Length: 120
Image (cartoon, rainbow, N blue to C red; front, side):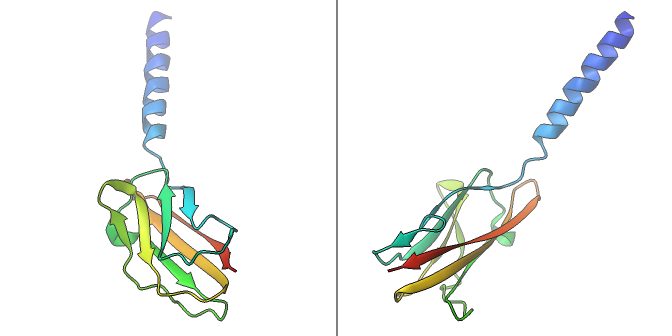
């Protein structure tokens, strides 16, 4: 009985440790904010994730209301925060914009998503 209890405890501990390694990078917050209506022209889109990212495989794309990609295609991970992904923007005109992102966490799990914002 004592052996079975130790075995069960060991298995539970291993499961908890393994489960902690199954992390995915989800969006924590964004700038401009998801679904926001803003008045000042942003120079970047910033997305903070819940996990550190793999820079070679993570990206942000920004599209105007015609579906044309308008970002500067200079996606990068912030040097002081490996969970912050950014892309620069040209001078935007008022309108609706769609942000599409793909994040690969350092443990290689992939998440994707999108959101919109409006420049008034």
